[in-house]
Figure 1: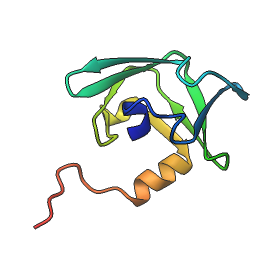
Figure 2: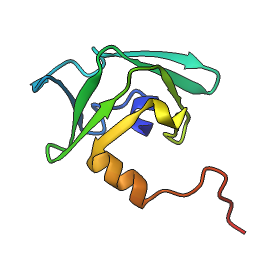
Figure 3: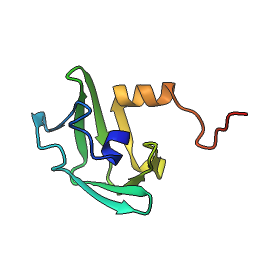
Figure 4: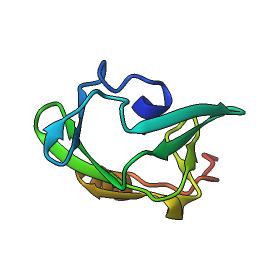
Amino acid sequence: MRSLYKHKLEENNFAIYHKRFQVPTYKFFNISEEGKSQKIELLTDELSILYDKTEQSAIVSKNAFTIDQFGNPSPPEAILLKGIMSEKRISELLPLDYKIN
């Protein structure tokens, strides 16, 4: 999600697929700035994402959402991640208000 926020999907080895065919990276994303966040709208219900030619995931969203500089989506229920991306996010998750003492 941080790569999407920074518009660096290709540079970070992400490829986007729609209905099993690779498509231009940002073809199905409508991205605009909203304060310090990026407002994201998917122009289709689901996109497949391949990272580093080995890790497969998918992103599903019917409503627009924003991503902050740390890659956190808001509102969280507006987006569904499947595959490796969802597994990694859950395993590495800390509360958004977590502070080191």
